[in-house]
Length: 543
Image (cartoon, rainbow, N blue to C red):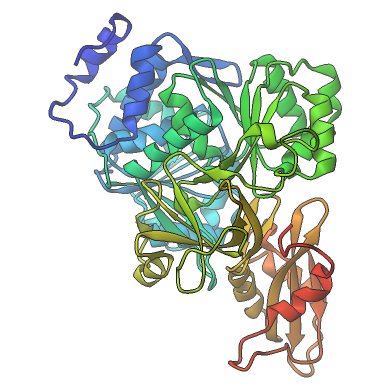
């Protein structure tokens, strides 16, 4: 394979590119394309560090070599617990370069949840930055099973930990192992309906197909400067990681979402694109920083998790009048993009008004249907379940064959979202068939919260539901029935939950109830009855 002159020296040090590559898709191809078409272009910008694609590619190949030296083999799992940054980006390519499996961990999880993920995924190596060093002491038996813990900070590695930069400095770059196709590329944990997270298995085909959907739907190109403001462990942000790389764009980072820092970074680094949830957008436009920075370079923002509230839209159009807004819908199981709403429809007036509450039309490589309980496609305008088929649909759930069979039926991913489709294929979500709350862009499975509450002494029954919330879209609300003679308070329930699960999953309100929870004839809790007072008068049962 002939590569352009600007990267010939780097190629000679990594060795000959393997011959006989199949026609499968593979994640590392996007990196090598960026290296070929824009070798001197800026790949990453973070806290004053600017690296070209030549720089980044060599560091990635060296990091892969370092992980291999630590004992990580193709197919082995390597987890990461860190805030956003250029090193996180390098990790997301080093793992597939080696043929290993990445396991990004939600940075907001509690220690027992992190422990479960490391144990369940059989992770061999953990990378973490300074923000999470204290978490190591809180981990259980899984800590002793790790081959190594790699410190991603700028300073010296603490005792007993490997240095990220030393791994890069001490190891010559290795060849791309060319893992691809249906080979497992990553396990991305999402909430569990019965209290335990499920590991969504995504292949190289899945992630590259999603990159194609992102490029086609979000119009990324070599001039794109994408801001990683949403957490990189979350595929809402990861949806763009491989697509922006494939076109040779630039990745800019803030460690975590902070309105003032986002505005400053957007202005300084001439950011063109970002992905945010409406709650973040609302915080951004009301930040005092927007009045003192030039944001004219921002061309497009993808938003998801919920439609854009009208008040937020009016304010953001005032602050960024030339910016385009694309509503994306999806789920981890879809890698994650399932549909996109063309930005022309993000308007309240004119010929394109009326579809702002839609989550758009099927992504380029997705086939979307609305079906009834027997999986028969329903007529346009009829509410049913969204099912999706295509190369972006997950392989299945890690170690959970029954859950996989329930979700993947006859080649279709059953999403659990209730919606209708109009005559032009626009999708309108009206409810959720799965027991889940979306608050501030985060999926919260009611079963996880109920499981945590049930561990509190004195709880006889509990049920968790989502209720409308002006700021977060939806809020977690718990209804708890104490055992006779027990004095439980809402504050005690919330405090207990915070020891078991991430704070964002904990109830924001708790109702202590003396009478039993309403049951169906089959003995199941009637959550529809519990939700009714909160959603009465609303046109749909999601917010």
